[in-house]
Image (tube, rainbow, N blue to C red; front, side, top):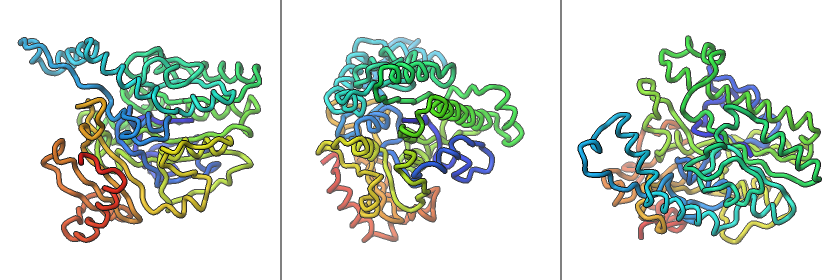
Amino acid sequence: MIISDDHLWADYSFMGHATIRTPHLDRLASQSLTFTRGYVPSSLCCPSLATVITGLYPHQHKVTSNDPPLPAAPATPAAKADGKKGAGKAASRQQSPEFLAGREVMNRHMEAVPTLPRELVKHGYLALQTGKWWQGHFSRGGFTHGMTKGSRHGDEGLDIGRKTMQPIYDFMDEATKAKKPFFVWYAPMMPHDPHTPPDRLLEKYKDKTPSLHVAKYMAMVEWFDETIGDLLANLDQRGLAENTIVVYVTDNGWITNPETGRYAPKSKQSQYDGGLRTPIMIRWPGKVKPRRNDTDLAMSVDLMPTLLDAVGLKPTQHMQGINLLDEKAVKARKAIYGECFTHNAVDLNQPAANLRWRWMIEGDWKLIVPDAKNEPKETVELYRITTDIREETNLADKETKRVETLKKKLDAWWPGRS
């Protein structure tokens, strides 16, 4: 399972980007059942990753936010410092007993539900965690092997891709020697900031954009793509490619603010496609016919039921996703749904308390409904998403009946703060 990190859905050569080069991902897409209209339910790393590994929506697994409530800053003049000093204070508060206790609550939420590695390990698999992992020690997600020991979002696991790929190759060799099937979670912090690409790649993009920040991000995407090439080549070299399912998704989107290098408003953490949309790919040589699907909707909640079905296991009754390898199920789907939450939770046990927006897509239309308490200044939004891909023209006032019809369906899915 390959999970890109903070990567806009359009920033691939095969998705039509004019500048960014992604030859290895292009090749993977050509070998896969590739859904170009893929989505994650939430545009934030931690809840999105929790959905990928559980097949549940954030309001089901309860990991809705990146972090627990942040303890109040000490009432001292130093606490009012901004810039790097303010960031340092926030980091210090993340080490407070209250914050760490909150993280433990989130970790227990993950332990309370089935995860893909946990289910596979029950049937003889070995399972390796690398890269981003927020829920404590890797074993708490059901992995038998891993890199992350328990800090906020990855500690040693974040070396994967940026510094080394060797832990994956050593694990493959171990599993092969033990004659065990294996699962690999490859979730590098790439192209996620810090945007520190090799100079050789940055030089390729410096003259293609007036912003150095944007050039760095573009180079990060190509650097990430190179690691995919390395990973897939090693599968080939080990003779494992023909009997290994490769899945691709990103956790959430990212648009670089050219002035600051941070994310732009309609991307990460937002209710817009810039934060929610992603290509989804499934490669299974001899079993899945490569095909590009630009029409049907796919979601990250579909990945766990798809993979369980593929290896002869059954999804749980709580999983609302479909088997993406079942063409009839894909065609029968009429709508998809999602939810965006606060970065720091308000209440770790009550998902609705953290809600910012619910959204849904049906056919050409995307409805966005703000939570009245957490987003009191926001209004209902409706976009014809297939023609207005940047979501610039809100048609809610002109399409009141459509809004009413779609909102009833959204409420029936999950009413949020009822």
